[in-house]
Length: 119
Figure 1 (tube, rainbow, N blue to C red):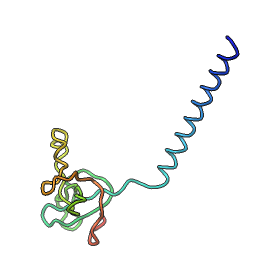
Figure 2: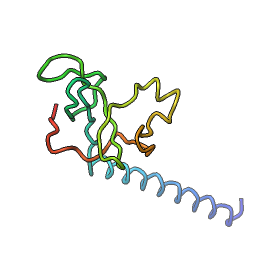
Figure 3: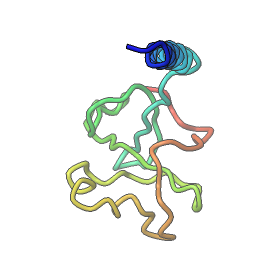
């Protein structure tokens, strides 16, 4: 092999190694900078908002001990939390994340109300 080819292979190998190292550092930094945002739930009976670790929906209400907490989605336009459509319905129709009132895409993260309760 010629020296030019060997230099090219060395340079490519070095760039690949630097890319792997950089990706590793960035992913570790992103993981240490913050945890996942809490999951938000809405009680289907009282409309109370709860937040905490992600869990199967419907989750158990901490006071009534009944499975009435549904995962919630936030509409940034209406600034309101709403019950999320069931996952199987979202799979079949991604439009289910649109707010029924204003048609803005809803998200699973948003501003928690002051009276939200931690699970």
